[in-house]
Structures are given as C-alpha cells and as structure tokens.
Amino acid sequence: MIQRMQGIGMTSLRTRERMIKRLADQGITHNKVLEVMRDTPRHIFVDEALASRAYEDVALPIGYNQTISQPYIVARMTELLLKSTHHHLKKVLEIGTGCGYQTAVLAQLVDHVYSMERILPLQRKAKNYLWDLRLKNISFMYADGGAGWADYAPFDGILVSAAPADIPPAFLQQLAIGGVLVLPVGMAGRQSLQRITRISEDNYDIEQFDAVTFVPFLSGKE
Ligand code: SAH
Image (cartoon, rainbow, N blue to C red):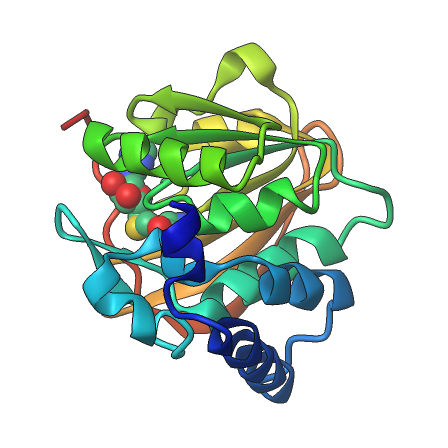
C-alpha cells in the first residue's frame, strides 16, 4: 500500500493542488474542506488502472455498479454539512460508505463518523483504505442504511451519498436539534441536493441546492 500511495509519484500533490484550485473556482469556499481534500490521496480509493484519473472532476466506477462521487460533489456536500452549524460537529452518520473517500474527508473534519454500507465487499475495501490512512475515528455497519443507526443517535450531521425518492423518516428522527441532513433526493434524472436542518423537535427547515446525479438509494443488503 505504501507503494500504492506513492504510485502516481511526485505529481500527486501537485495534481491535488490543481484539483483544489478548480474546486475554489467552482465556488467551494470552506478552507478546512479544501485543505483536507488537498491532503487526502484520492487515487488510493480507485483501481490502479483509474488512479491517473482520480483527480479529474468525474465520478469513477468502484465496482458493483457504484461510483466514487466526483470531487466537486464531495466538497459541496461536506461544505453544506459543516457550514450551517457554528460549532464543531461531533457525531456524523454517513449512508453509503462506497470506497470510503467521502468517509476519509469527513473523519478529518468531525469527531466521529458512523458509516453504513449495504454492499459487503465495498465496505471491506473502504475499511482497508481507511486503515492504511490511519483514520480510526470511524465505526462501520454493514446494513441497509434506511433505518439509520439508532444506537448512536442523535447525530449532529447526516450525509447520504445515494438518492432516495423520498427522505427516509429515520434520518429526520435521528437528527439532533440544530443538526443537518445533506442528501440528494428524487428519481433518477431529476435529483436535487437538499439540506434539512432540524430547528426544534417538530420543525425542519429545507433548502434546495444543485441538480445532481447520484446512484439510487436501494433497500436490503448485497
Ligand atoms: N461516498 C461514496 C459513494 C459511493 S456510491 C464514495 O465516494 O465512494 C453510493 C453508495 O451508497 C454505494 O456504495 C451504495 O452501495 C450505497 N448505498 C445505496 N443505498 C444504500 C442503503 N440503503 N444503505 C447503505 N448504503 C447504500
């Protein structure tokens, strides 16, 4: 793995710096998000054959019909999650670990990440990559994330990286007051990024952002 981390050589940091510049040009303003993405080797999360494309602003296949989200989307969702609260986020629930890149970014910005995935081999890969990066403030669960993770609720933030047609009620219930849920919502081809803030026990504020294309949120396990 050490070899793999150096695999694309001395250009990797420079390539990441170019990616950061592009993200800033695209409107990402949260400095800590940009810093963490500059310091996180994205190429180790994709197959070696795709490593040279890891810093382009595209989604790439990670197997099992899934994709690693494009850097802009990772930055945007992370920024939306962090920006709305003035205080530091302690517990964050992530649905859709995938290859673990978004998990790695989150783990460097919040106290603890609880990450759920329904495809076991993907979860295994992600665990290995995150271990190689020595990120240890992460708990994993192999399950359909639709029920959330009640044992550790409430969460200060919930980030979902697959698109449900409607928001699963468990996510709203497991949000702390003042907490934020960031997710793509809608049917294929017409999804939008939304941020839901729990204002009080029964009141939620909904904001709508970019039109996006995500893989569908599926039920059950594989
Ligand atoms: N952030 C990930 C995105 C992977 S794609 C990355 O950058 O790699 C979305 C992921 O959500 C897939 O791994 C898919 O298996 C997972 N997923 C879809 N529906 C899910 C559900 N109900 N529960 C848990 N994970 C789910």
